[in-house]
Length: 455
Image 1 (cartoon, helix red, strand yellow):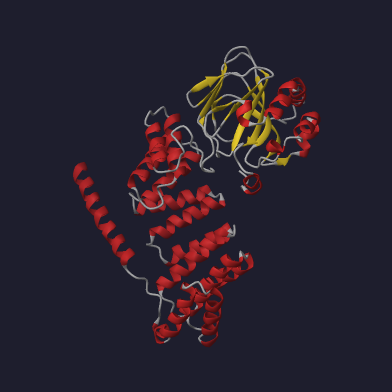
Image 2 (cartoon, helix red, strand yellow):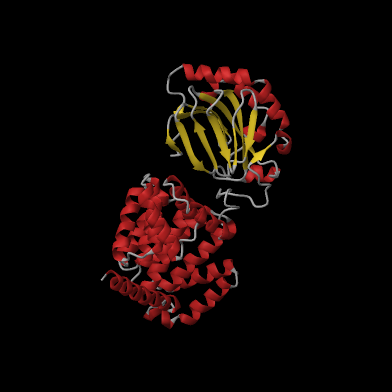
């Protein structure tokens, strides 16, 4: 019976795929009865838009809207022109006009359903672009109400909730999709992604895996390969590296070991670096020659027992106690934190390659016995990470980056590229304290350092 059910499902899937293909080939109907009577005028204005004559096209469609205020197609053309013009002018104000005009289209009488769908979909997309996530979700909810059988709209609504940070609502949406279409790959990878974020590691794996195996549009995304491999590693499944390899072959990862997702192509890539290779020898010398000062200010903060060290909150620990005290984050100085470590902060001000690194941090890190940090990778290849040993037990503390395991020494700097997989063990009988200093990758240009967005 099970095999028969499976076969039935395959036949249904095949029929469903054929329907999808036909729907793709089917040209959307954008003209109502009235718009068909002014098709020549609409086509003339649209021709200008397609040729990139945006200003002329705007005037042409505005003229049509003034002449035929009840024409949905003319108003949609005006919205598209405003959208194009916003991109040309890099104007948020113009884009907001386009967003409003897209909605106006759907408020007119006798609007073809295909046009409603196109206008509202683009409106939601542009709202997201402007960072108006809540407005985008409202637009997508309207679309789902109007077209309840279009699962792609429900999937987009789920993404909208995720962008809003509302994982609970996103999860509910994807559960609905999977009830309606149990083999929807897009819903599966996103549902697995949410389960993984809830630390439901074992439950997330089949959804991520089956979603990726489906090959459905929107599933071939580095984040899903990243999280499937990570979940498998945590579950002790050796297939993890098979998926990392697949992610690499699909162009998402620089290599099986180096799996950061926010990268600049062409930067030198190796797990461990020497001070000379980085070119930041002055910074390294300064850290090493002043390590006791840095250590003492860190210990003073620890001794205050006021919760100034904050527990690691990125779900990187399998077990144990690991806390941090941050002085700089994303190139911004934490003035309050620096009040407790004034000499350390004053010393670092001389090194903009670190204090200005918007893709990194400067922080103290204390790890207590019995801690294990899962194998993981940092988000970007645009930084290198320096670890200055401050209080290091003689045995039991190790860090692996790629396939090379090392340990810390008091007063010495270790430098590695944390976009490569790394893992930490603290099996000593006392705490380990280090000072972490991120720096821009030395091959980044001055312009890239100025313009790369923060992470």
